[in-house]
Image (cartoon, rainbow, N blue to C red; front, side, top):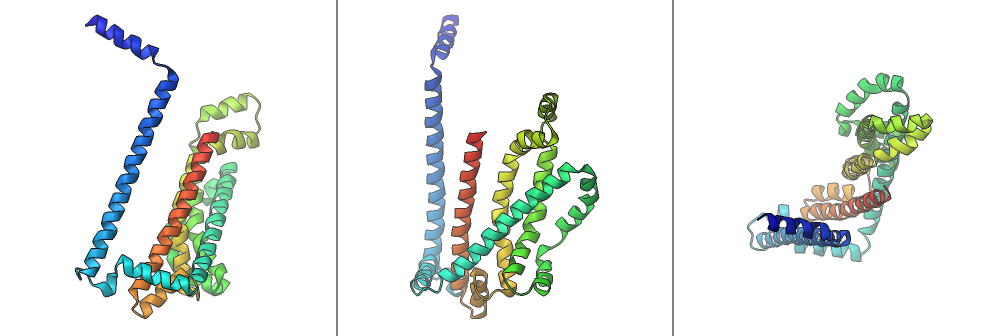
Length: 278
């Protein structure tokens, strides 16, 4: 028995590191493959079940439609050129609000981290602003900024900025103090400690905030377009409700889901790049 254990230990020690890494990579690739297969299976079953339920009248087709009918409508609108302008308007507003909201939140988080006095002064205001129903601010933006793109972007900012600020600021505060002590012992300034320690250590929180902001930006833009837009996917949804064309409504949601997925995957690619650099 002892000889067997000694042999196993010897084999373990004799295993080359590159072989261990190769086995790890193979296991990880195999897991990713299983995940993709499971995801596509779930999606296929959902779409197939929905299609069957619609064609065999198991559901109210007027309200819920079904995939082939939705794709036919989207294809028709794409062919006549009436869909693309709405998609471009909404995507442009979403991307602008997403980028501005993230940058404004990061800047504000940096500002209040830099000044503990300012952080204590603004803390109760952040709590109140975070608790406010952001949708209710839409009419105020329309009155103050006009019924245009600016008010829609302001609606997105009202949803994304506070969340971004709170999450990133908390990440700044929770940075390992031992790392800060080390750089301070080497004579680092406050700016150097922020750029060399605080900010890099907060990359995971920043990327997580970006992922959340993808969804929040879409919420903001659709709410804004519900209120004021004459063009965009939100406008198409409102128009679909008004004329009782729920296929158009669901089709607009499908386009939103596709574009939001692309944005999310871009953020995930950015995350992988930052992780490799770290």
